[in-house]
Length: 127
Image: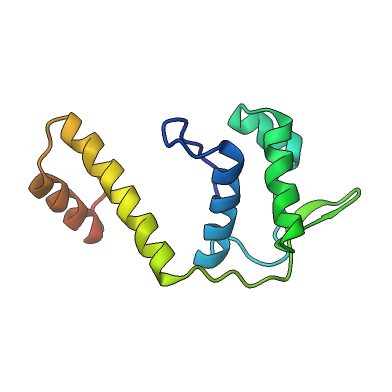
């Protein structure tokens, strides 16, 4: 199961962020076919958003045959293979890095300090 997180500063509508997180969860293997998702109400409460926001995201994913909703059993990942084009993945990573470095810079960290910290984490350290 993935942990949904919304970024109000991104400029991307919340429903779109939910859709993207489900698609990336599938593409990365963090979500699998048949896996149960939170109910619309549960996810709306967890994310502190309107029910319609989650409902819109789930509905759009149902139209794309990524999600299946069964009365009484809830919403689950359908039998659908999501492939994210390399270019889109590269752009997403570029955006994440830009935002991350901007935040780090606002706290006074240099790129070299950030790289050192990432290298330490790569080695298994997690202070």
